Image 1 (cartoon, helix red, strand yellow):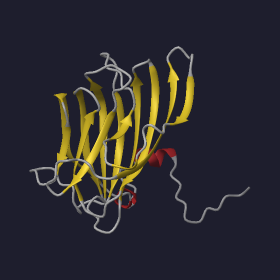
Image 2 (cartoon, helix red, strand yellow; image 1 turned 180 degrees about the vertical axis):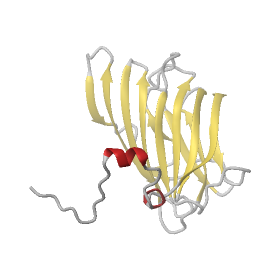
Image 3 (tube, helix red, strand yellow; image 1 turned 90 degrees about the vertical axis):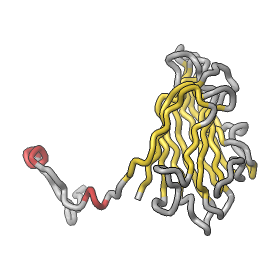
Length: 214
């Protein structure tokens, strides 16, 4: 089969090593702008608030990205979840209505068990609780969560607010657990703040970084 060559650019090995720019590729890819990092230290919650000196969840960006690095809980049991919620204006109830879905893949260190399953106990159907992102996080010294959460156009006054998250967890039963969560906040009111917490106990350590995407 002959592939079309129209519109393609080829770069040989010597040219690639010498290249310092590829025209408009970088500009066409958009920008991801660092906004703030929060570091846990036996913290009950980590909150990103609109209106503080260096955190703005507004119409500047149509997409926000939160990254989780080595989120480590104080508790070590099967009922410990890493979760989030959002709120509007200056409200701090963090009880916006969510409809969501959640599935996960798991594999045990001993190779005794591996599975892929939908987790109906982790989804919400027009509920106002904190949305779980990572299930049964281990609290031993080497156990933690890494992952990310995308929040789309939170300042919109027309549409609901979609989110998608993926987290890899060192499960307390010595599994790697890959958790996928998605859904929407069923409100057309602008979201201005986002809070993260464990379902039980504190966040003992770890970083959450916030980026805005143009």
